[in-house]
Amino acid sequence: MGLKPVRVGQLNNYIGRVLRTDPILGNVSVIGEVSNLKFHGSGHVYFSLKDDDSKINCFLAASKLEKITCPLEEGTEIIAYGYISVYERGGYYSLNIRDIEVNGEGQLAVQFEKLKEKLAKEGLFDEVHKKEIPAFASTVAVVTSETGAAVRDIIRTIKNKNSYTDILVYPVLVQGPAAAADIAKAIDSLNENYPQVDVIITGRGGGSMEELWAFNEEKVARSIYASGIPVISAVGHETDFTIADFVADARAATPTAAAEMAAFDTGEMREYLDDMKQSLGEDLLRNVEQRKNRLETLNPTAFAQNIQSRIAYEQVNAERIMEAMTENIEMRLASGREKIEMLKDFIESSNPKAILARGYSVVTDDKGKIINSTKALKKGQMVNIETGSGSAEAEITDVK
Image (cartoon, rainbow, N blue to C red):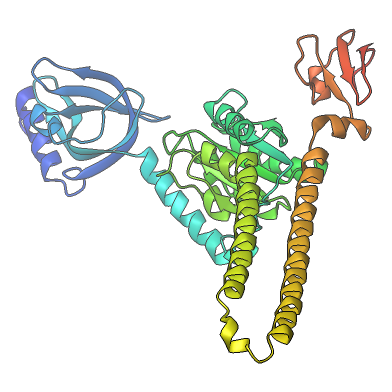
């Protein structure tokens, strides 16, 4: 015969004591998504933790809530630390919480460090593999979202520095499950199909670790490493670091800083030429003045015995000096002209009209927007074709 009958309250009380003394259930940590979150007027918090298979009721006392540093929000995946307890009056059990931490970023941080260590051992971050960023890039490709603030900042900064650098925007996803593959594909495509590109800028504006995570994916890192075109990584804010930053040829603190790094400044070039011209003129005048002073300070009494020969000697010496100075001036002026011509040729070669004159053309839609992909064309659409010698309108009859 079994034990004598007990009251319901006694049974629930006994179950509660068993759970409290269990070595596992008395100190358990549970991972789950917060749902049915309710903040009671008493200060206590009631919610459920759920996963794909089940859920458990949770109770967070007001006294414990004050010590919780991470935000408790609906849908957040957390790790809850506490113990299993029975609510005797209701006859149900719950997880009574002592502490909470957000699960997502912790896991991402571990993944980040593991991949960083792996790629570092393979040598992907070594300085010996870094390519030099060209000083006079004529074409800059930007791999980022076409709607984000980053692309606008980059374009504005480059245009402020000069009007000769061509900007090729390669729009990609920068957030979400498909973003990493999209970014890697864009970098590979630029290397294969756009050999005229001098430097690639890839990145996006700031965000959380999850939002920037595409630039921590291995496939993006390997595409950057394999790129024959130098790559500048510009992800987030100055304090944000991603795997892309370590493997890229250069890391910029922000997208704007990347544009500053990639484009040359014509204003600075003009200032340099002006300074060189002024310095050259000052050096020549100083040299002439020194020679003149030396001639003026000669003492005639020291040459009394053969003054005529001394005068002739000094005249010959002065002529040699003037010839040497003239030759030096001409050499410097020739060198300056050569540098100016080189800069002129470079600037003229970067002129968009000069590029069109070599046989290229630009296709735009009826709103003047440049069409750089057949995906933007439709059968029957009217487009404008701009060449070096003029323009023409055409109707699209077929799209392949």
